[in-house]
Amino acid sequence: MKNAEQAAAGGVSPAAASDVMKNAEQAAAAGVSPAAASDAMRKAEILAEALPYIREFTGRTVVIKYGGHAMEDPALADLFAQDVVLMRLVGMNPVVVHGGGPQISDLMRRLGKEPEFVDGLRVTDAESVEIVRMALVGKVNREIVAAFNQHGSYAVGLSGEDAGLITVEMRDERLGFVGDIASIDPAIVLKLLNEELIPVIATVGVDELGQAYNINADAVAGAIALAVGAERLVYLTDVAGLYADYPDESSLISETDTAGVEALLASGQADGGMIPKLRSCVDALHGGVRRAHVLDGRIPHALLLEFFTREGIGTMIDAKVGES
Image (cartoon, rainbow, N blue to C red; front, side):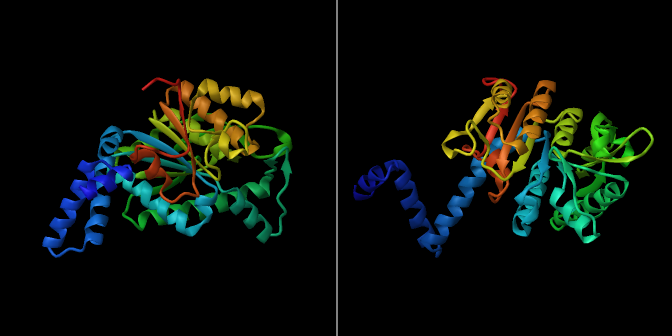
């Protein structure tokens, strides 16, 4: 009776409290400490909670735009690799798209070239575009692939230059070799997914003459999601999600739809770095991607928390609220 009263006072049902006591007694009888039994039960409950979500997402493609602190912090980078490989192992088809602005700027400075920006966009002359390729394809992409393959031989690195994946057009002559996406040929990505591999895509594309261009990674993620028929599009960021009145934390939006995102863009309340992500989300959702997610990549196991728990984290964006 006392345990039941304590359970009720603590918001736990008497039945649940009875189960806990029963498990503890069984553990003690088996020579297992109550603390160890409790820890084991907690882990089992987490796995049981994840089961319906694993069933729901089996065979579904998820495109993840990887960047920010999650990519720069080695501990978070390893957790991200674990999460993506686990998604693959439970039957999901993850595709990772990455940029690497800080890494590009760092390499430019080491090579004696100061980064230059116009209206917040990187000026990329002939010399700079080669540095972009070195940083994104030669360094960042290989590091991500290596991190994934520490957990099994699943990841394959490629860029938009490979197999005609991303064709671009020059955006503005003032910016040099900065491109807007003209077309996506998803054949190589679909082939890798069919072979149960994880494509990791560096955001360098080419024009019709084979000239390399730097491309906005947020835009690439949305375009890839649309081209491969993805179920979900995910952006890992350095904020908790979307805000109605950034940076007021109380205005965090847990769920919205494309109309809500378009209203947020029109209001001017969206932070500058969030604008290309939101525009990409809207285009992808209008094109058939079912949902998009804006997650805080600084949170360990952010992907697992969003996809495999009841509560989730961050902001979920539907094509239309109420659709399933």
